[in-house]
Image (cartoon, rainbow, N blue to C red; front, side):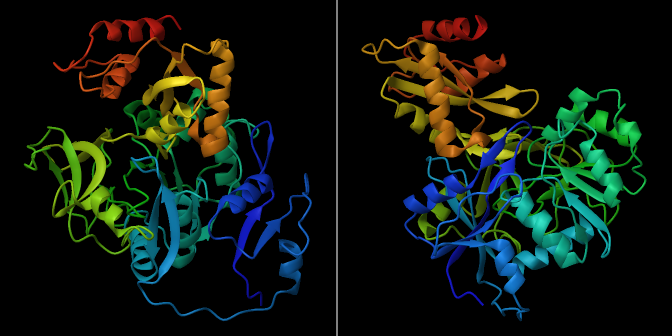
Length: 472
């Protein structure tokens, strides 16, 4: 047995047309970390091995060959199981703590009642294992329930084609499939008429579940028509660890309303409140909150930051957990999630902080001020877009500065940030007190109606923003 504080990581990952070396990223992270592990277990990939650091890096296959069976460790229900960092509105990620006991109970019950997954069935969550869906529904929930879980490396398209998901479902006889709407949109774009889809036998498949972002009506209708079996949207967060809104396949499906994530999961008393903390009537949008206490499985707090836990989730609406999302409830009790109410955007199911990106962009030597907002994207839901005012003292070509800003965000956050578009403007719309009107910039970019506040400093700036966007 190794008595070490160790960190495990594969050496490289495969993308559609490139190889991504993970080890240099891990080395850089360890170098910056306050807590430094005593060793690093490395899984070598045959197609591009890396050099191991002597007396520090440990080869996975070598360790497995020498390993012997171990007994399990008894944990208290409230002992931390893992810490998973998610975007924060201040630019500093929040360490979501997951406990052992409540987490196991919640995941097992969700497998039975939400997903109708029986022991012995095959469950596939096509997600990133480092994201909460991967933690909850690639690793823990299927194994706790006694299901076979499928671990997949690849994309829904171009690995090698848009039939990849259907090929895996046929090969492993998948019964329950869970992915993000972005993946289905990508397949729809590449194989709209289903020529690749019809090549595979999907008789094993019972359900398609979608989450991570709102499932738009067009995507739902295409998937339903293609699969001819239930397509079920549901809503949850890193903080909850499992669904809060769902259509319970294990209890009996209720009629689907496209655009809605269903009704509250048992244990979640979900309300829609106004900014003045009043209950919103049906079909009127407000803040989506959950009346305390939270059920088992939800976060018990943030790692080493109880004050931020209170300020981020519990202070805005006393007596309630504030999800950060807006939405409304219809006359039949179905809830519709309309999007984030803060600066956290949803890029292909990944929650990312635009303020964090803004801080990175603002740190560039040529940038006088900037705003990063999440703009609508047909494929990924939202994409971050930068609006940058340059210092007059710098005469570099904008294309070069744009390239540097994109690289700076990618190097700091990673490719998942999907920050690729920078618009250079003479000034940004602000209130007279100096607050940048980011919501109006987003509305102009998305070409949706907006209301100009009476406190705006200069109305003509909005026309400048429109001109910069429309000229491209």
